Amino acid sequence: MTKPWIAPQLSRRDFGKLVGAAGLAFGVSPAALRAAFAADAVDSAQIISGKASGMLIHNAKLAVMETPLKMLREHDHTPKEILFNRFHYPHEGDAAWYATTSAPPEDIVKNWTIRFDGLVQRPRTLTIADLQARPQEKRVSVLQCAGNGRSYYAAKQKVAGGQWQNGGLGNVEWEGVPLRPLLDDLKMEPSPEAHWLTAEGWDQPATPEGSDFAKSYHLADPALDNAILALKMNGEPIPAQNGGPVRLIIPGYYGNMNVKLLTTLLFAAAESPSAFQSVGYRMPLVPVEPGQFEANDYTVYNSVPTYGHKIKSVIFSPLPDDGAKAGDAEITGVAFNDGEAAITMVEVSADGGKTWQEAEIKPAESPWAWYHWSAKAKLASGSNVLMCRATDALGRTQPMDGLTRWNPRGYEWNGVDRVEITV
Image 1 (cartoon, one colour):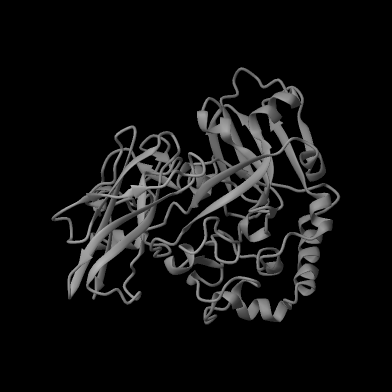
Image 2 (spheres, rainbow, N blue to C red):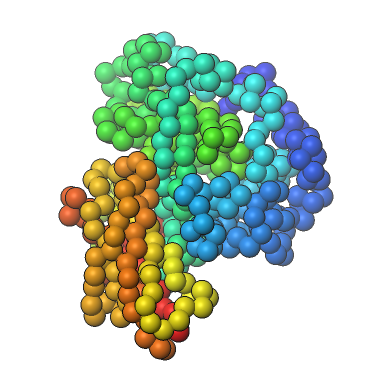
C-alpha cells in the first residue's frame, strides 16, 4: 500500500522539526508537551493548548477526550475548544502538531499536497492553494466517534477502548471543495476496474509493523455526492487536532471515515488492506454475543465498516447535577442520523418508559446536523428516569435495548438514551 506522504520537499523528519518549532511559537515547550502527555496529566487544558478545562480524558498520551454534555449543549456549532478529540498514534517528538487548537503554521500549509493517484490515466497533485482557488461549499454535520456510547455496552460485557459516554460528538460547520466536481474537473480517467476510493492521512503508526490510517468508500456511494475536502471548521482554518490543514468530510458518516490530515486519494479495485479498514471500525453482519465473536475476528466478509450514523438522540437537560426540582420541567436534547431521511419524531418519557409523549422538534440546519427537541414533563420527588427515542421518515428508530447491538469493539451505540436524576 502506498504510504501517506506530504510534499516531496518536506520530509516527515523535517516536518516534525517544523511542528516542534510551532509548538514553541504557540507557547508549548517540548518538556511541557512530554509532561502533558504523561499518564498523570489531570486536565484537558494541560494536554491540548487552547482546549477548555474539564473535558473528560480517556487517553492522555493520545489526547483522547470527550465533551461534557453541559458544555456541548451551550453551542449550536461546537467550538474547537470543546470538540471531542480522537487520534490513533502518539507523536512523541512532534506532539505540538496536534497539541494545540491553533491552525497549522503557514510553512506547513504552503508545502502540503494532496495526491490523486491509483487506477487512473492522469495522476494529479494539488496544493492547499489550488484547493483554496476553487469554489467552496459549506456542510453542517454531526461529527461523532464510532465508539461514542461504548461505556453503555458494559451492562452486558465491558469492551476494550475509551469508555465514551455521550460526549464524543459535536455539531460542526465545515467548508471546502466539493469532491465529485473536483474529481470530474481533474479528468484523471479512472480505469474500469476502479470501484473504490481510498483516503489516506499523513499521520503514521508508532512502529514499522503498524498499519497506516486509510479508509475506503465505494465510488458509487451516494454519500460521496456530499463530500468535501474541508479547509475550514466553523469559519476558521481547521486546527491540526481536528484534521487540518485539509480533512475529508463525508456528512452523516462516523468520524473515522472523515480522514484527517488528508494527503492521498487513491482509485482502487478493492478496499484498502489497512487494518483500520479491513479489521478495525467494523460492525458484525449479524448479532453477536460476548465470547462468540472476538475483536480480531472481523473480516471484510463477516462485517461492514462504520459508515453512516445510526439514528440517535441524547438528553441535554436536565442532567443529574442540574439541581432539577419536582413539578413542571422541560426536557431538552438533540437527535440526528445519517441524513438520508428527516427526523420526524422524538418521544420522551419522564417515568422510565411507562408513558411517552412527542417532543417538539426544531428544523435542522442541514440534513446531517442535529435537531433540537424539547418536551414538557412533570418530575416527581425522588428518582426520575428520563428517556428519549428518535424516529425518522424511513421508520428507523432507536432500539429500546441498545445491548442487542453489543459488539466486541463497542461501536455504534444508539440505544434509547436514559438519564436518572434525583429531585
